[in-house]
Amino acid sequence: MVNTLSHFCAWATDQGVISKLVPRESKGMGTGLFLAPEQGPHDLSESSQGELLFVPYSLLLSRIRILQLECPPLQQTFEAIGPDNLTERLAIVLFLLFQRLILNHKECACRAASPTERSGKGEGSMINGVSYPGSLFDPYIATLPDICTPVTLDSEAARGYLAGTLLLDSVCAKRAKLESEFELLSGNMGVFEEWPVHPSLDNFIWADATFWSRVLSFGTQWAQDQNNQEHDHELVDDMHMVPFLDFANHAAEPNIRWQVDTDGLRVWAKESLLNDTGEAKQENHRMHGQEVYLSYGNKPNMELLFLYGFTLQDNPTQFLTLVMPMDEDDPYYMPKAHTLMRLGIPPRITVYLNNEGGPEDLVELGEGLWVTQDSQYLLWMYSLNEDDDLGALIEEPAAKVCVARETPGANDDQEQMEEVDLIDEDTIGRLLLTIQGTKIVSKELLHMTVPKLEIYPVLILRSLVLMAQRIEYYISRIMETGNKVQRAGDIDIVRAINYDADAASEHGSRGSLTPTKNIPTQLRVRNNNIGECLMPTLLEPDHENPITSRQLEVEVQVSSLISTMKNYRTEEMDLLVRIGDILGEAQTRCLEESDFIKEYLSMQSHQETLDS
Image 1 (cartoon, rainbow, N blue to C red):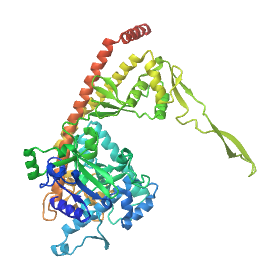
Image 2: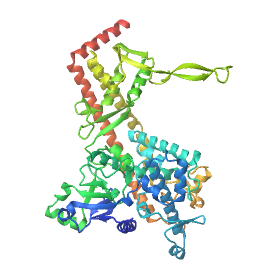
Image 3: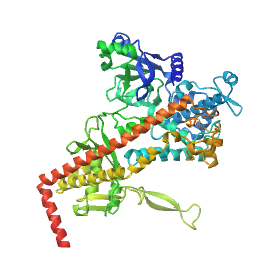
Image 4: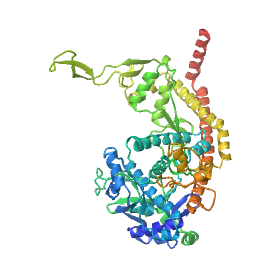
């Protein structure tokens, strides 16, 4: 990795990058960005007003920039997809995928070549007799890690170490979505047919995860900068990958900031870095360099691990998003479901353990516990029942249209005019929920109606009970899957992070789930026409397949990721328990402090006795 970074830095300088920062290994955080050893905060404050890095516009990797590059196979792929379907993300993902496959094919070919053949190889790659020249961005793409998030890890390993967690649900959903997209691209659309190296599903997942772990949204900055007249936002892409800057690690309190200018992107030191002028610190910075940090946003550890592959030990942002399905036995299931869909309220609840850095509409559910406004609306809807004067009706559409329909047996020019609803009867717009006669057609009406109900204190108690039941479900799920984590720990997961190409082809699929460690020695020869060099298989050392430094780097990455996932599982359990405790205390306070609730429950108990 050191040689790769040195090559990258030389390339960046040649391409016009101006930097007072250097990329190197950061303890426990992969590659990070550091002030050059000869630089210190005091030096920065006296020169260039704290400017640390300049990356020219030509190196900002976006869909527009990729479409400018000469690469016939990619151009054919983009034409097959079509301009309407070629999103910013998909263009960058396919570019990363193609260029990484070519790079890795060259690397595999170089390892197999004799020293004489190796010295004769140029910058391009020869595949099936066709030469593919190197890309401008090859030195950058070569620095991208092979394993970066739980999504890119072997699915069985992820299921083992994240068993029972909310994060595993997200990982599985993401992989399923990418599998469908890959099948569409490779099967129905056949966009990889002209590629010299055919990608596997794992390759595609790697490219997507790499994109999300490193992309910057320029549009976010433009929206905040009302005075920026230099860009036509309709013609400039939002999503960019920025070589050099994307080595910077995350911190809750960053010490650098970035800004997009007409000629490129600039990075500046924040006051916290410029004012770090203690003599002892200054000397240490000059000797070893000080790491600089970006903020990736106010994200909880679940999101940090999902997107970037790490967690923060003392993360100030703590919230969980829980899937909250409605009881299908609810007599008002259909009108409630249709109303929630119309209002755009998803069946999930986001729970915050502090309200700092969260959305402005947070609602306190208990002492030290907040939910989003939509989450509160969802709990209200779930808590209302047939005894609370609910109703449902079919609303006639506000407008109708006459369409011409052919009449059987009529002349060609004879038409029958028929009245047809603009909104079909089967759509969600027809079935409405009413609360005490009020049609719930907007969030505003829901917000105005429910708190005025006499039974509102009881709805709050029901909401707390529903939440507590869901938290109990997730806690029990983690506890019941503990044996799966133990079994995962007993398996040599690190040596099963990839799958052999030939073994995959024997099963009829490049995405076969046959672990490398079970593949016979005679099947361990790589197929250079399939992109299985992207994440190198870790083999036992022998004369034919010596372990490379890159494979050792992958093993370190996987070991670090597994350790982080194991720690996160414990952390999620602790968060769920804390939320459950707060909900229990909130229920107790409701029962003790509300005379209305006491009277209501007494009446309910009396009625149940009479009914029995």
